[in-house]
Length: 619
Image 1 (cartoon, rainbow, N blue to C red):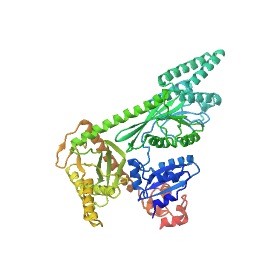
Image 2 (tube, helix red, strand yellow):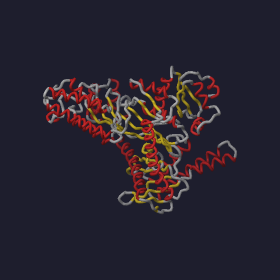
Image 3 (cartoon, one colour):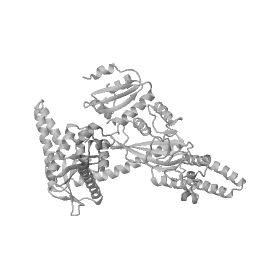
Image 4 (cartoon, rainbow, N blue to C red):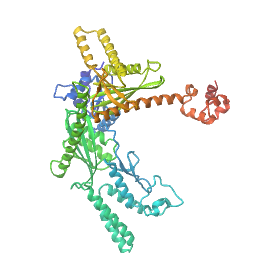
């Protein structure tokens, strides 16, 4: 048995990473320390801890630690473990947005410039992210219009150049028509432009124009003049600041009772090229500097777009370690600054103000939806978590169910779940609904911190009164199961009574049906007395999307199982015949029937089929 007090005595006073586990052995927190002995002991001493840390400590069953040589190594290991395990009590970067970047494959002989939403560690340079995809495409169009670079995805030799060469938009490197140094000069200018070094670009263009004029190359000089004017116009539109540094990220924080918003501005050469927002729940009692530290470590981990300077409001505890790590990653000095006055402070305040506006607008939209739902459903509390279920099958075959979640008025597709029906045979949708919801409720009762999370406040059944009754029966089933377990437990009658009251309260879940019309479109919400509820057009749209989402989840899973069954063959049951060998055999012989007719010698001609396998196949 793990004795926490005894294990605390064994902690070394060295740098390292500590990993907290709960009684189910789930990793619930990962942290780093300059001295493991001092840092880990703090959690278990009586001092002023936030509610979040108090809760985390109450769940710790045991811990482990890894000793490293220095704080920088500890920081990198901490980032890796957080990314891999996603512990519940760490600040976790959650975002399903993919922002566009402009990519230059600088390692190519003749680099190209591309629009992409995917960053990979391939040695290319990435510029962005652009919060507005239109801005990225506009910049790419500008580059293609003003620079004679190849626009083909893959550069291969041709017998004749493409149309872009003939209209003066490409130097045709595929034909060997351009000197590598001349082509690279264009690429370097584009890089300077994307990095915001427009003054340098304009100065170089002036020199090239003078040189072309002196050589009486007037057409070239005019082309360079037009390029210079276009860059000046683009530069004037983007200028937002007097800050002279080329590469800065500015981070601001705003908090509400429900969420924290982190807003990050990307400033490149005095131009703001984009911004991003990230939202975190249940962090309101965490200090800003702790949120900032967690955000910076996760955001820049495996991110090729590290700026030379990061500006934030609060001084963070591990600033020096993070600066050292980011400097190594970037290959030059990275600083984390907390400006106190002037233009730089104004930028931090702008990021904070925008985070507050973003959060206020999001909160307003969500609160209006939640308040309307509370009123329509006649509830005493806000219906913060709503779940819906849908059954899918064909004549009782391949029976499955889909579950979707609406959290704080937002449909969370990542929380969707799929079920195979286990106890119902033949087509009986209400019985399927009863089975699935009983199973789902059991998950949260047995493991409140598991993948299903806490129990819902409301369940929307996809259907009318029959499905409503099936859902209520499932709730009764779950309640009955728990009552039977509690009565058999070894505890006082008072404890049993209190536990029963608690489980009854948790399973006091409101149930409504999502009713469709003859065209299979959402028509109304229905209560258990068959009353159709009056709701606004906006709320109807949200409920329709909710119903469509759960329907798609169920039917997609149903099709997957059906297709898998259709493509199954006798070969799947033969040990040693995997997917590759199965495909090779079918490609060679055309069908399972012809494989049966083949001789052992013929079977052995197929790649990967040994004599032993051929004999097994024949048998």
